[in-house]
Image (spheres, rainbow, N blue to C red):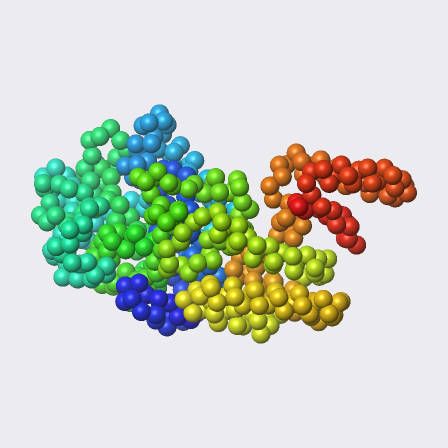
Length: 466
């Protein structure tokens, strides 16, 4: 397997620290608002990575954190007259629900900042003891960037770059403008925590470093983890500062491989609330099936910026429809799975830095070939078994094609309409059994008035939207 290392800026053969085992940490959401398509893209990329690693025989321990201490959370709680926990619980639950709609597996570990304070205290104290951090008169603790000769080597920034510290807080107490807060003394009426450094709140960057040390590091680890991932916007300052903290507090670098996914744009603009064009995932899920969004958001290579527009989404859906139409041709057959030549080729392709474009081209080719052969070979059992194996493998490694093919084409009707159609199908079956074909035809016409088509199969009657 090969991974593009976004720090070394080259594709590297993947070799984990421990043979057969992979440690992966990805920066998760700050839970103060609904998830947007950028959150979905990042979560999907690393869900795919885990699936491909596991398909290659690795045992993966995957952690994705929840940031539940943040000034934006406190502001939202004050605006809505709710507690911090009410805000974070609400948006964490919503995030989990929406990720599930996309078919994203839960991480093995999901640490929260509020549950990791002692680990942060330990790491901050080590940095103070190692002379890489200092406490100011007003109670803040800062990382001393001048003490780290390797600072900025992760992001390859230049020290005098004009925008280099635009996201780093300003304080007259700092030794250097680049220094960043490890602990912030606060008197703003918001939430605060007792610590060895005084009452306050942790800085953003210290959270991930502390969580990684807490959940992954062993005495013999040459790196804290094998792979660290997140959005491209996190490379600087967040990942730069994480790496500096871990490097200076411990005897090991933070990660051996760094992976960053591209931005999500809407109509060509970087998605940003400041631009007023943020597209919440919950709104997209009202209009489109979760698998349709999964397929579309994964259809562009993870390192490329993704330009979201509905014309492309509808074109992408047609490719996914082809998988389900092939699956429908095989409906009713017992599930089959064997590792076919197609499966091996698909895995080899995805093992090349998650080469999704080539993977989808392989799938298109397989579908066309299977349909053509089924047209001529009819009920050839071995062919159908092989095709079912291919579809099962696509479902396993890419996470789409898992639904009942008829139910997939039902998306968009409300639950009341679906319940009414189900009731009418039962009545139609009863009329047919009683040989009341006139009533059966009348009921069929009523069902069709919902804008659906009916398919009578040996396994029962199914419907889909037309």
